[in-house]
Length: 76
Image 1 (tube, one colour):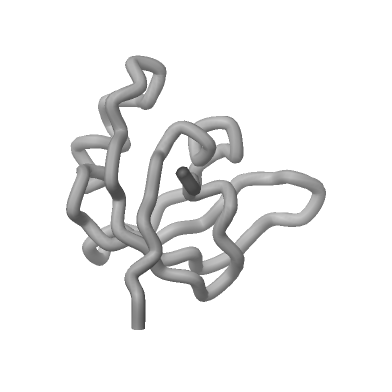
Image 2 (image 1 turned 90 degrees about the vertical axis):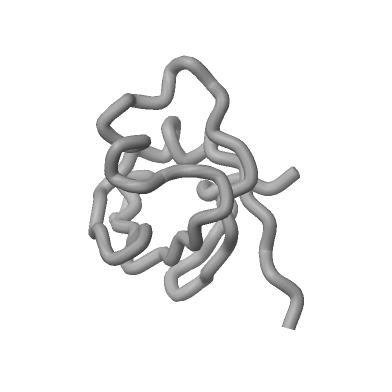
């Protein structure tokens, strides 16, 4: 299954699972929950953080955290 780390700038996806215990609670409180849409706003160079939009909340997350968030890309 794909993760947020697989997405490129401008991509959108639906969060499927965030059950890993190492995901910060603050990220869950900001809307990183199954069923919510996520959009990649910007990618920092040299494997830096990802700038994402979840339900209108703009967040920066590390690639290591992005690899723990399972997604599904909607079919057009």
